[in-house]
Amino acid sequence: MVFPAPGRRLAGDELLEAYPWPDEGRWVRAMMVTTLDGAAAGPDGLSGSISSPVDGDVFTAVRRSADAVLVGAGTLRAEEYGPMRAAEPDAERRSAAGQAPAPRLAIVSGSLDLPWSLPVWADSALTPLVLTGPSPDADALATAREHAEVLTLADLEPATLLAALTDRGLRRIVCEGGPSLLEAVVAAGLLDEADITLAPVFAGTAQTPRTDGLTEVARLDLVHLLTAEGYVMARYVRPGHR
Ligand SMILES: NC(=O)c1ccc[n+]([C@@H]2O[C@H](COP(=O)([O-])OP(=O)(O)OC[C@H]3O[C@@H](n4cnc5c(N)ncnc54)[C@H](OP(=O)(O)O)[C@@H]3O)[C@@H](O)[C@H]2O)c1
Image 1 (cartoon, rainbow, N blue to C red):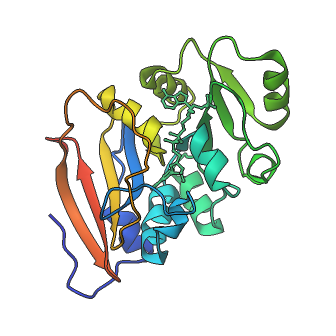
Image 2 (tube, rainbow, N blue to C red):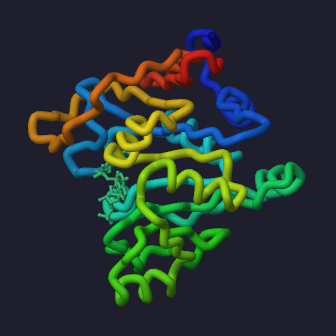
């Protein structure tokens, strides 16, 4: 287990190395921030209000070598994602490693009710993918195709979603939520790693809508804990995969 010296904040390539991807095969990691009382967003409904620059550093480090950033439509509707790009040195490093110059954003949506005015569609280095079900609304599909590459899949089960990504060579997959999509991936037994930041705040969860939850808890092994400014950045992996 890795614990940096107290007070030493990992940054840059050190942080990249602290969040490695396997050389081969699909690897699915969750990247989420949570409060002390288990909220996934602050009172404004956004995760930014419970995050911090130190958490942002980890978020960025994990994206730097990812092939795909997978999110549920609810997250895109709430969070207004910015364009998916990579800094020039990262784009060069990625190209040398046989990767696309930047991660590809992949959004899961049955409704195709997505925020089409966001610059994320036109200004990302790679056109985002939208993963939808077998019989989408025709008008919504036509709109989606103006902005994204749309994959109409047999269903939106996590195994189908992840297979669609790996079929396109996208094997290093970071799932940035939200809680509904992440729960589905965990329930399907397809999560390899969870990079979870604990924010030193309470946000209130009494009103948080919840699903039926998992039928069994899913346990992971702790690999490291980084701490800075009261935040705890934990890296967990599937048992036996450290
Ligand atoms: N704390 C964090 O790190 C973090 C990270 C991300 C998001 N968030 C917060 O979480 C909230 C959004 O999360 P959420 O749970 O409501 O939404 P979500 O998981 O991002 O998206 C749920 C949507 O994904 C689509 N979907 C399709 N197939 C699915 C499947 N198999 N499983 C789950 N979703 C599927 C559906 O879209 P359609 O309705 O279009 O069919 C569904 O409504 C926001 O408040 C956001 O700020 C927090």
